[in-house]
Length: 93
Image (cartoon, rainbow, N blue to C red; front, top):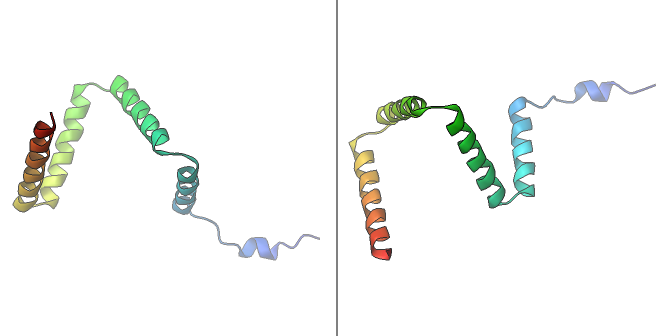
């Protein structure tokens, strides 16, 4: 006879937990190049599927969400950082 009480008492794994464990296992198996390649392939597939209107729409939605969550200081800070990074690029060229 099979002991089913142990099986019934086991907690089922949630979808989120299964995804987290799967992601951790995948991260152990692959290096940065793997993730760069799948990211590039995903971006290329998305670009083939969608026109410029799609990118305009998601850019507008992202900008609106960012504006809701951040104040003037946030934009000043990222502007300063961007300017510094650009100046550094020019100095290296």
